[in-house]
Image (cartoon, rainbow, N blue to C red; front, side, top):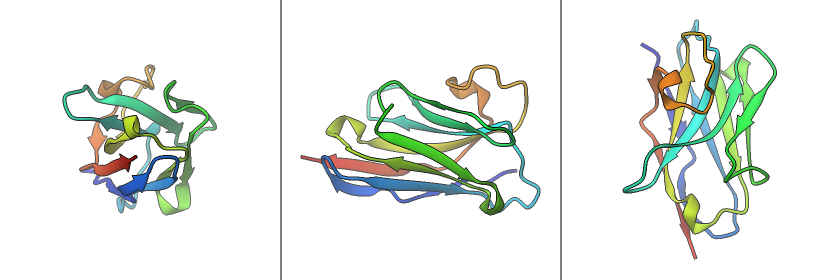
Length: 126
């Protein structure tokens, strides 16, 4: 069982930045990709960004493109989400996810990811 631990959430003013981290202590961890999703109250879980684990490549959601950047550090078995120019609509619980089984053809689809973190709350105030 792979455990994913998110950190870095909190309260931030609109226009400000925040950086989320997600890591696993699984010593033999490997995956097709890791991703970030978010879910606001009363809304469905929404894709934010994904990064391929053993290859170069990433995907970014339309609503955050140009503002959010995801990255990985394989040595630390971690991914990061740098969020800039935050607005109130970005307020949500952000989840880290890992796709360890193939073929991973739909990077934006939650069903592609078989491990999930507990989530970290991001609240953007006016």
